Length: 102
Image (cartoon, rainbow, N blue to C red; front, side, top):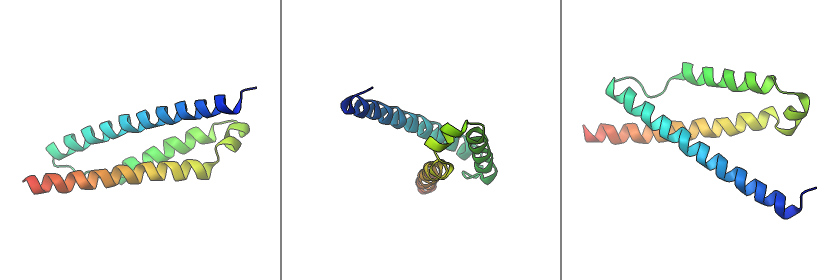
């Protein structure tokens, strides 16, 4: 059995991995925004967001019950809602910046 300190260290490591994953996602979002701006496409695509939700929730549904109990669906929804809202907020700021530069 791991000691409390070992487990806290593991949590710290997972937090760092999550932070790096969020950075990677944000850099991709920024790149997509730039491509859309060059092609004069809207930065928000509700169909794409719906597709991402479907993929995420299908993955969660495929899990074993023990996994679902460890990471409840409402937690997954709250987490990704926050990620998506953060991305949209970032895109809105980038859009307004690009509009001011024109």
